[in-house]
Image 1 (cartoon, rainbow, N blue to C red):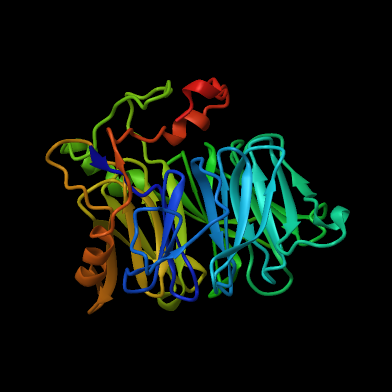
Image 2: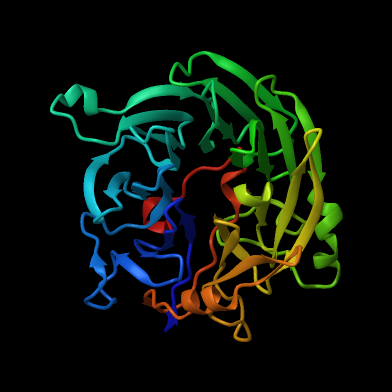
Length: 385
């Protein structure tokens, strides 16, 4: 038996860390102490979170003020929690499987992107008016929507990206008014990051192995950062191996630099990215121009499954161990020290001391190049991870 790995990590402006493992999640404070959990395997002093449907959680989000937390699982159940007492304030079943969720700036609505190319929004508070509580269609793409984010400042935009290499910027809440398209990626676009320090810009990551900086008002591509130039040595010296995923990966025997996630580090005016299979995080400063500068590759010893930002610290969740020699650590935390990034030993140790659940074996996550394939079809339900 092995300890289940963290599949998603999310942080809040109130200092909470959400650590998702399969159908459960822990909520810790900024010291790594569990304050609430859906798991039965926690101390009696920890708040037990109810209302969770026991199926694999695929996306989570905190509201901007940290007062709400939402999850969506593989059975299309969305649950919204009040973080003051971790009670479920709303639960609903959506029509199509979600890929990403985010709250609007007010926290009054949750935006839900799905595999059928649509984004709906639903009120976070249950209304006596049943019609007013139903999700409403905001916008649509012609392929899978991979991520959804809100801009900062005014006017307000909703940003979406898809499997057809596009970034779309739509006015909010009247998202039928398209402000711009960001065109330039040559593979599916997996992730979007916006930042308060750059209200007119966004950074995207893609299966084409690039990070791109955009002007969201015009859709102009401002800058491209090619990850192959930075990360190819990891293939050359064998620290990253080419191989097949666990569900019919296409062209698997090639070098890949697929970006899993990009986040903003507000206090440092930086962005951080996680790259599939690589034991690194990539950190980029945001400078005048605007431009992404001082690009650094920080080795974290094991491949990263997800990354989040807690204040000025980077929380990187590890992918499942790939061999007997790998540790079973859940995460590593990096903090700025003397102009560099160093391991926050105390918080890393606290997170790695947490129990998740015992499983027979850690199955590798499907490669993003599986669903990124435009010929992709969902495997039969009985075969889904």
